[in-house]
Length: 227
Ligand SMILES: Nc1ncnc2c1ncn2[C@@H]1O[C@H](COP(=O)(O)OP(=O)(O)OP(=O)(O)O)[C@@H](O)[C@H]1O
Ligand SMILES: [Mg+2]
Image (cartoon, rainbow, N blue to C red):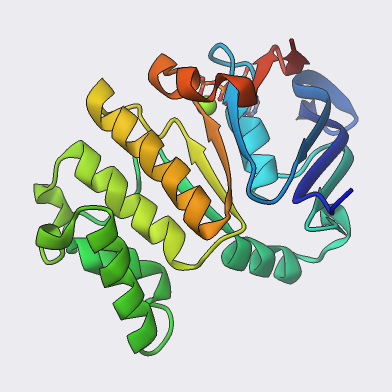
C-alpha cells in the first residue's frame, strides 16, 4: 500500500487538569487519508470536528495515540520542524476566513509571503493566475471588504493553494454562503484537487457540502467515529 498522507491510531484528546482528565473531545480515533483524497467530517455541534481538524493541521496534539503525517511521527518532531511542516504542507480555510479587509484580493493571496523581504515575481504571477482561474480576474485590485461572501471565500482558496499544499483543511467553509455559492465552492475544491492533487478535509453541517461527497464522509458523535 502507498504511504498514507495522514494516519491516526487510537488518538484521543482529553481536556481537564493534568493527571485528571475529565472530558474526551476525541476518543480512540483511527483514521487514514491518502494523498489527494477528499474527506468530509460531519457530526453535531460539539462532536469533535474542529478538534480533529486542529490535530490534523498540527495546531493541537493528541493526549494519547499516534499521529503520523507524511510518514513522520508528529509527536517526535520538535516545534521548529512541526511549524515548518505546517507552513509548507498544510493550508487552512476557516469559516470567518481571516482575510485582511483593507487589503486587495491579490494582496491577501500574497499575505503569507509578506514575511519574506520581497514577494517573488513567481508567486505574484501564480497568485494572479489562481485568482483568474477562480473567476476573480476583475476583482484583483479590489479591497476584500468590498467583495461578496463567495468572492471572499474564493480569495481564501487562492491563498490556501498558493503554496501547493499536500493537505487543505476547511472548517465550515460554507457557513456564510448561500447554497448556490456553496455548490460553487465545493466544485472549485473538487476541481482544484483534481488539478493540484492536494488532499482535502472539510468539516461541515451543510447538506449542500455533504450530499455530493457522501461516500467520503466520516461521522463523529461525542468524540467517537460512528457508522
Ligand atoms: N480548550 C478546550 N477546553 C475544554 N473543552 C474543549 C476545548 N476545546 C473544545 N472543547 C470541547 O470539546 C468538544 C468538541 O469541540 P469541537 O470544537 O471539536 O466541536 P465541533 O464538532 O467542531 O462543534 P461545532 O460544530 O459546534 O463547531 C466540545 O464539547 C468542546 O466544548
Ligand atoms: Mg467546530
